[in-house]
Length: 233
Ligand code: C5P
Image (cartoon, rainbow, N blue to C red; front, side):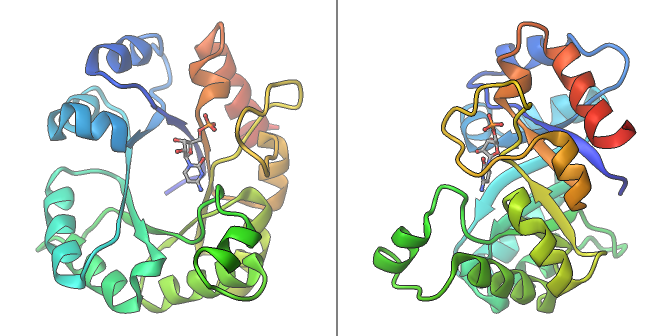
C-alpha cells in the first residue's frame, strides 16, 4: 500500500465524524477510527465510512490471550478494514494468532501492525511501573523484531524511532507514526513530535495526524498541507 496521510478521527459520535468527512470532496482521506468512536457507534460506523470510499485504520490495540485475539481479529477482518493493530506486549504467540485470525479464506488480510511502547510512556515509567529495563529505543526495536517474527507488517511508533525500526527490520517493514505537528502549530500533549516533512525524510510510511487537521479552522487546507509536505514536496 502506498505511503499516505491518515487522519485520526477522534470524534465521539457518528454525526460529528460524518459532518467532518463531508468537507473532503475531492481526495477521500485515509481515516483512523479509534476506541472512542468504535465503542460509541459500533461496527456500523466502520461500514458507513468504508461505503463512502475511505480507507480505514481501525486502531483498537488488541491485547488478550491468543485465542481471544484470534477470534476478535476474524470479526474485524470481515468488517473489511484496511489496517488494524494490537499490542506487541501480548507476545509473539498472540501476534501469530492475530495474523491467523485476520487472514481470510482467500489468503488476503488487512495490514496488521503492532504497538511497541506507547508514545505516552516515558523511559522512567517503563522502568518503574512496568519493570522493563534498558533504553526505550532498544525495547521498541525488540518489540518490532518480535512483530516481524510473528509475520506482522509493521509497527506504530514515534517518528523519531522509525529510522531505528527500519534499520533493524528492513525497509519493507512498515512504520506508522503519530506525533505529527506543523512547524508553526501547537504541540498539545504530544512530546516527541516531527513535522510531516521531517517524517518523510526519516522514511516513515504513514503519518497519523489528528488535531492539526481536525481542530484546524480549515481542515481541508490543513490536510492538503500535510499531503503536500509528506508526499509531494
Ligand atoms: O491529535 P493528534 O495528532 O495528537 O492525534 C494522534 C493520534 O494518534 C491519536 O488518535 C492518538 O490516540 C494516536 N496515537 C498516538 N501515539 C501512539 C499511538 C496512537 O498519539 N503511540
